[in-house]
Structure formats: C-alpha cells, structure tokens
Length: 416
Image 1: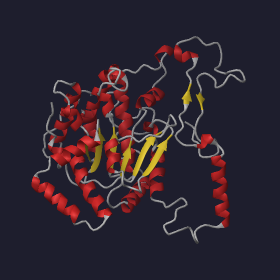
Image 2: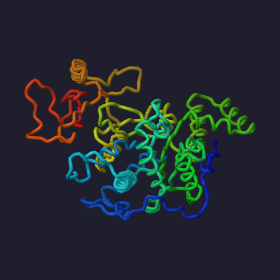
Image 3: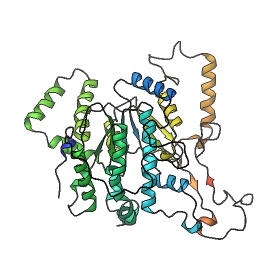
C-alpha cells in the first residue's frame, strides 16, 4: 500500500545517471522558445547590463539566496488567451492536452528564466494539489472530474522530461519534487503512484551539486502527512538528539530555527532559507493560499511578503517580477519599529492616511478578496449573434463582460 520515501527526501540525492526523457518530447514548444517575441533559448535571453547589475544587487541584499514561492495558477486560462481563436466558436474552450503541454513548457520556462536571471536563487513552485488525485464526495474523480485527471495529471511527467532537463542544465538548476510521498502512499497499480515513482526515480538519478540554483516542485503535498512521516522515521538516538537540542534552545526564535531546519530537510531533502515572498494570482478576485507544504513551513515567518497579480500567473512579465523584487529590497509603508509612532508621523500624513482609510471604509467593494462574476456571451454558448454584446440600460452587466466586485476604482483596484 505504501512505498518508501526516496533517498532524496532526507538528503541530497546522488548519482550520475542521465535522466530518461519524459513522455512529452514534441519539437514544437522547445524550451525557451517564444514565438512572437524577441526571446530565444540562449542562456542570456533578455539579459543586459541593467539586468546583470540588478541581479548582483539582489544577491548582495539576500546573501542567503533570494527564495520565493510562485504559484502558477490559471494555466489553462492563459493557454486560451495566447492561442489563436478557433474558427468554430463552440470550440473556444476546448483544450488539447498535447498543445497545452507545448505551451506549458515554454510559458513555465520563460517565467522561471526571468526569476533566476533577476538574481533569484531558490524557488518553490506548487503544482497539482492532492485533491486532484482523489475522488470527490460525489465520485467525480477529484476537483475537476475524472476527465481532467485522465487527460492532464500525466502531463506532470514533463517536469522530468527532455525539454525541462535541458532547461535545468542550461540554467544550472537542481530540481526537487516534494510532496510525492502522498502519491507513493497510493496503491501500486494507481497511475498517480506511477507518477510519484517516476519523479522519485528522476531525483535519484539527478547529479546534484552544491551551489546550483534550486527549483522545488510541490506536487500533491499533505504537510501533516509529511511531518508525521518525518517524526515517525526518527530512530531513538535521532529523536533524543532533537529533543536535547530543543531543550537547550535559549529563546523561541531558536526553537523555530531548529524545527524549520528539521522539517525542511525532511520535506525537501536539503537546507532552504525561509522564503522571502509568495506570488499568486487573484484573477477571480478571491485571495487563496496555495502550496500547503511550503506555506506550512513558512507559517511563522512574519516577514513573508504576499503578492497577487490580477491575471494568470504565467502572464507575469520580467518587469513585474523585477518590480516585486525591488519592493522586497525597499523599506516602505507606514510601519513603526518602536513602542509607538512618536516622531514618525506628521499632522499632514495622519490626515492623508485617515482620509484614505475612511474613503475605503465607505466602499464595501474596496474589500480585497471579493469574487469577480463573469458572464458568458452568446457566442461562447455557440449561439448566433446579431450585434454587439451591449445591454439595455437597467438590464445589468452586458453578456460577455465581467461584473466587477472588489476594490473600488481609485482605491487600488487592478483591472483583471
């Protein structure tokens, strides 16, 4: 019923065997290619003296290595945005997995390349949640049904496939797969177990080396399961040593450091700095925390910065990532590191901030996290159209438009 955790979940995997190519290997969508853009697959894509200088600043500011969590949500939506519209309107929402995979390889590697070339050292990318691998209460095969599980879950193998391998080698990246202990728990004849075994075997054969960039794919993780396994796997001597180290801790920060180091090594297979930022999208308005394992490890990190882009994450540009990282390195906002704000707030600033707060309070739609409501137009339902999507006054939002709910315009609302 279960399988042993790979060696790489407790220590750096070793080995020099060449990883086998994955099931995805079409020549279209070659790693780093970007049809319609100026970028190529060369390692210096998009780099310039300015980018190099910025990366040096980042490395100097984060000597431990800039570490982030980027949740790539809305992948299917971004695929629909970027592909040519089909001739048949009824087919606009249909996704062919092979085309989707080709797009995914290019879009993923473009975003990863931006991050690393801007000075990033370590990155956690949460992927498929464990709910996608389990039956829903209604027996529909998981969150998005058995058809989604059958057609799209196997594409996770391309993370260990030929094109991603070339990307890892080109960028000097050591890839890790965390959370797959849950997949290995499933019966051996389950396709999800086979996926977990394939990713485990890949890590066992990868030639890890110190000093490389780190890319951690989080797949199907259940933090409580991983943490439980980590503690039950301890020998009596290891448990006694950990308990002695905790007993000798002089303060709570030291306690947190000891436990973070222990559980990170158990989950990831190597030491990892506490993440500095979390980036996800709120294209539907609501704010969620994805990546349960990485977020569980970061739960006590009071300085973790959370960013949300109002569109699918794969559409994030290099300039947006640069702006985000620049913001991390800049002290901003109205914060006090003393007992109060004495000597830090002027009368003018207080009036300005109070006015802003009262204006936002007066508008319930200024609340972050309210969901957007999208209505489909007639063409999206395969119906003929005779004119524009306009609606008569008083009829409500036009078909094919978005009914806005969220922060009021003028108070920080982003178009989405």
